[in-house]
Image 1 (cartoon, rainbow, N blue to C red):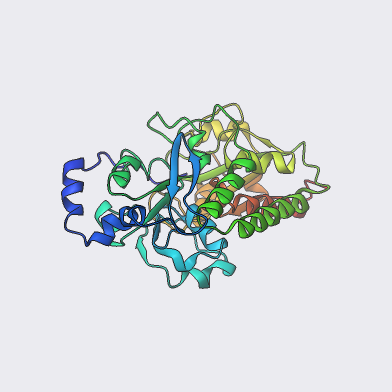
Image 2 (tube, one colour):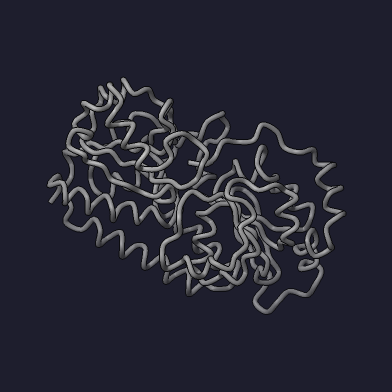
Amino acid sequence: MHVPRRLALRPLGLLLSLSLLVPPAACGGGAATQERQPAPGYPRAVGNCGQHTEVTAPPARVVSLNQGSTEILLSLGLAGRLAGTATWTDPLPDDLAEANSHVPRLADNMPSFEAVLAAEPDFVTASFASTLGVGGVATRAQFGELGVPTYLSPADCVKDNSGAGDGRRDETLTMDTIYREVTDLARLFGVEERGDRLVADLKDRLRRASSGLEASGVSLLYWFANADAPYLAGCCGAPGIITRAVGATNVFADTREEWPQVNWETVAERNPDVLVIGDLTRRSQSAESAASKIEFLESHPVTRTMDAVRNKRYVLLSGQAMNPSIRTVEGVERLAAKLREFGLAG
């Protein structure tokens, strides 16, 4: 789940005039790259969300607009290529924290277009169309007019984002789509072997986490954020990947909305066996941290009598694990371990 969309995007004319105030490398980092002779083994291109993303050399000044995209680049050993990151929900895993410590953070949430241009990017990548699109930082076309190639996570492209909320999934998301993001970026940066190793490691972790697990009679509910009108997972996004991997059932599997907002009375009626709750460090919605969610659940008259609450069957996941990302595998690992701990799965 991402932060709410902005109400309006700055007029294109204003953005383009602002770009004239930035040194040529800033708005022409990509353009200048396109004017030079291609590097050995380049140009390289991938099809991306119905568009053609091409680079004539390995990107050297990348701005990643979402944490999920940033974590892929860090996992590929590309921290030195990152000129800026933004839109964070969680602390980084220990194995990525050091590499990220020297990467500039342009904003904790969505940065301005001016801040992105000031980082002099020659490539921009994002996890969500709401960040790299209308109502976000800028559209892909606007970056393209400045000579800056862009890449958008395929996991968000296979989702219908036309509505006002977090969209809906008429096509069920699988890890293959997330693996494709890894291999696409690895190809564009010329580190295909690293990409293959990362995908192989993720597949191995997923296999080991779910091996021998039997949880077919267990019902789950995924709560991302917001206490007043909670965002709860529908059937077919990243929580769907996690649920299928452990063989359980999502009590809101009857909706294809990504994160529908559901009232607590309906939640109590469905009475899930286990509550999977986001433990976020961002400050965007109410009840972001796991501690605040648990306090709410155990004090609210409608939720405090639910079986999962009375038995304290909580599974804490990062926001990244609940979003389509390489951390979704971590979500499977943690949920599988807790189901065994609760005595709900073999």
